[in-house]
Length: 456
Image (cartoon, rainbow, N blue to C red; front, side):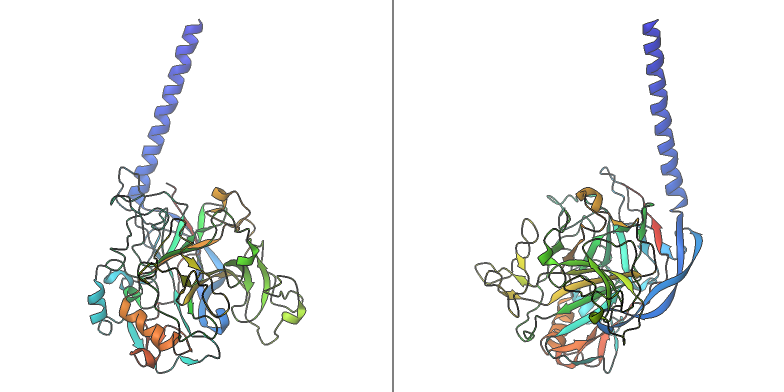
């Protein structure tokens, strides 16, 4: 009798196993055949302001619940499945049309020779002004795609990509940033979801923001700044091609000295003058832009005196990431492009200069990623938070992988940064060799706010 029970139990287990395999197989087949059925909130574009008065756009306000397939406002591409079970890059952004990936296999030389004919640049007779202490260059991006790769932390080993090794990332800039990216190919493949398209091939990424229901939350806008140190514009050099670096800490940001302009922070911010929250975690909501809610961005405490009544723009939730801008050099004086921890080869400014250990001074890049300020964020978290075992948003960090077309980068550094000009919208100031031109502006994002993501 005991043996019969054991046999019966074993048969039940086998049946359950086969039933589970059948369910998985059916799910995979349905997923591949029908595409990704995405439950989304559609959004309409509304004008607003971004960081330091930069004019931009955001999508907020009333949302309409809608079901959407891969062709409705979003291109979902699943890479060829490999023995490593690589999902590939998915949830590709199609609101940019076909232009942003049209020339993604062009060489750097081909790009430089066709900047005008392909429309990487557009006319702009102004767009820049003298700055009292810094050289600045900034432009907007849209998100590009998502995947579970990290070409800095998990680069190819002996030519073999390390796929699905990382937490879920949201990428912008280079459209081909994935586990196969290397110093050798970052300059030869990829379009771009940033201003200038493939002329701006650097890779920018951060952990995906998730809403608690396995959905990635798409930002309203992404603003990228490149700035010199204060009163050091003329000494600033080009960012080395192939440089890799990480800002913040995926294991949790416990060093408060890193916050504000030397690290990472979450903020409820108008994008112009006023803050109503500054902290190391995602708030449950953003307080309204009033004098009573005003916060001093340095002390992180409420301070009515920090309120500027001239700033009436709506509050937005922002993830702010400031990268180091000083680089170690080797024995021949060349910048060191990486280090085992992807951090120790770079350092932050010390006042208006670089520390003697990291003497190569380049523009500081910073990410200003914005979401509507009227939402409930109580369930929001970063994809890296669970792995780190920290509070929501506490593991904020981001990666930068240099891939600018050299000629274009040289011009905006020489024309804007070195001349101590404040250049908006990717303007190439006259001193750089492209007078009255700017990087081709990417259109406003008009896709869904939330996208359901597959898991590896």
